[in-house]
Image 1 (cartoon, rainbow, N blue to C red):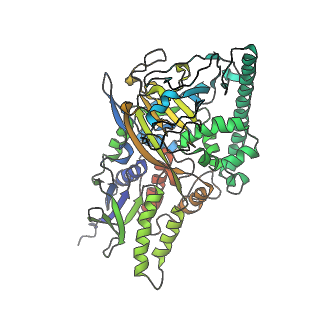
Image 2: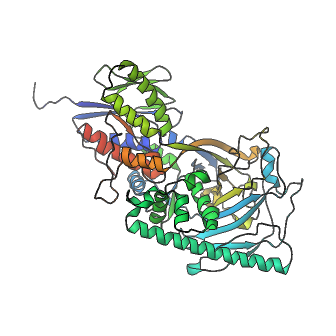
Image 3: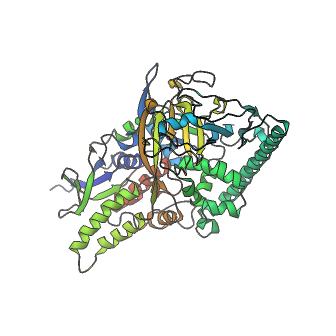
Length: 575
């Protein structure tokens, strides 16, 4: 045989999960090895749903020009924190646009306990704004509101599902770089001079408290980031939760619990308790890297990203749920069996699922191997034990995302509407659990209800302004604590989101992607990555807040430094 003719090396890889992490890994395996003449990379992407996971819950809304694709959940990103994601989008030629978000904080209150069918509750609440912010991410304008009249809750509805109104007087005061702050009175306002003076004094007090607290927080954060302490495993802050950090550095409780925690509970779609137990370093690094940065969204929706990432993939299995893993008796390592008893052989398995889903499959595989190796454990069992132990360190919160047109969920005063509206719900509001409560998160509502006014981000939905009718106002509410009118609901989807804890942070830093000593943030592959041909990618397993950045970064690291090096294949990152 001619020595110049060499047999192609065949490597078969199964990617389980078609979110951004799975798509990025599969795309990179195909695109990054296309110049390798002596290697045949066979990639199979498995998705249990009938659509690719990253876009499975998104919806299309008809507009005058064309359908507008609405991402579910909302996927925005900012320069500074999303370096890997931005490089990927540039490579794919994905058009993006500034989101120009404005923010509003408000409380949903009732003077009398409300216990009625969930869909009616929103008509009897008083949604009181206490803080609004407009401007850039760092320097903008905060407004303080004083109530000049009181409203009385009764058995008559205060609001309809298509409009809302109240009387509010707004006082704005400028701080440095045109920044100010706000608070609304928590008790009914009497038409008296003493009350007005008291409220004015309190609003100024809160403005100064918020302004000082934010400035103090950023000074400490930037100093810790500059000194490298946020990535130093030996520094005391490495073992602090966010709640402990607030106390240690004397962050004012009002700012911490009324402003900061609700905001980040919305970003992370976690409960307030989960946010207080978040590793402080992960949140502070997000703050440091996001300073003076702009937020962006994909112009044509995430479907365009899905289409371009899936274009080179020839073996996408939709509606296929992998049920079990078995050792292969052939030259391949594994046999995957789906819910139709169909089998697939592979050399590597990339889990691009949530940790708890990977855990279930690996536990079943471990039990199968354990029965075969009753007397002595081999290295495959030892590796599996370490991976199972690692996956157990991750916990999750569930979240509900509803697209709808019910403006009753927004602040009662339309002048306080912002692109992103963060609500806290008073404990007196308890929808009757015996009635239809499919469209609210379970009580107690220990989370932020976030309502995004889609028209203000997607201009093609209509040039809706505060003075125009809200008939065509499209909203996306995450973790609704009061229900939209079911007649106004366009879609409803449940999700799981990883909750970062000190335990899961340690698992990432020791088992998945440990930091390289003597480097500034560079990571290597941990002992739970690929020693048995099983790999883990996704937002949950990358350092920081579980966001799109971790999906791309973890996929790149596993494919290039993991599978590429194990198989002696040079994988070229095209972005």
